[in-house]
Length: 334
Image 1 (tube, rainbow, N blue to C red):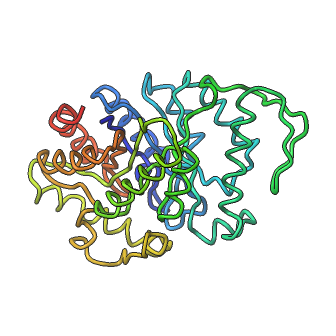
Image 2: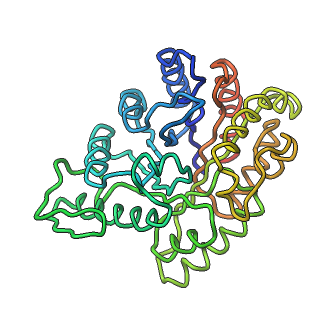
């Protein structure tokens, strides 16, 4: 299993925080993660992120690429909100800057304020995402492209810069619901497992994904990534005591944003920390964290983006967890 550092909670902070210092802290954390053996970094994506300030992932990753070395750079992109020509050129540029280390995770999104701001409806978001992904793949080939889609049209177009990865940069599609998981499997895309669902839900969906994948006749699955709320300390109680205020605050925001309603069957993200934690957060001693990650490894997960910090989490707390994870957890999972 390859382990990565999720920066999605560290590139966010309160509305009055010093984001210059926050980004300097993130750079130090990335340097530390690289030195300690983490294999990639991950960033999330939102617009209009009140009550947080939140850096946009592509420019943030471009700056971080100067210090990541051979690490991969993975980012969610809210695909229905993107112009695929612009995004194709930005991703290709980042792929050149990193010498072929870019992965994008197209996502539908779930927040009405984001759809409204970009003139997108829930009804057309899936069509926009799939059309945009198809056009980007054509452009990344470097060949002349004529494309007359429902939302985008290009005539005898050539991309301005070709990515290093061919035939195209890697794409890991995100999905919450069963229907979208099945669609991803039929199309032969890598599924990036939902970070908020509990283990039982994900284990069921992984089996479904594999079954539909096999029925479609694709080559054997070699990549099955996930993202997870994670924290490690010397004891389970210490880990829980440290992360409780940060995770409680983050999930209250998720509840306000409507994330719970986007989950399979809908979930209540306003419930207590203890209830939220069950099967959802990987928080505890090194042995606890190894055991939880091993459960995912056993169902076929190959990559795990671990989020050790959230808005307001001090740098020294994140670094302490990363050091302990590198010492105790990484050797057991690699």
